[in-house]
Image (cartoon, rainbow, N blue to C red; front, side, top):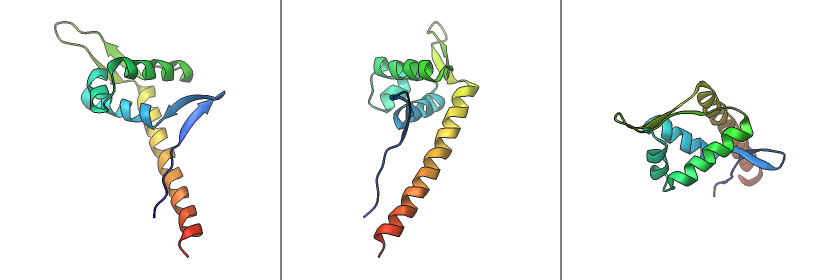
Length: 110
């Protein structure tokens, strides 16, 4: 047996940042494109773009710099704030995971 959990951040009862946006931003960082990151997560571009816009609005920061297509093609990359949010969430998630695993061991390893 092993524990499973989901963790996300809310403000005023509204979700602000969680695993979905985290994975989407990681994909943009890796692939350089919102569209490609969305496809890698079996998500539509429209859905991905909506999540990013909502998250940026709720956080009050820009997470991505976008370049509209043209001869050179479009793309996106993380802003400094986007990189910070990824790092903070990664560390937070790791600490929560350690705490959950420790609690699981204390309560179920008898």
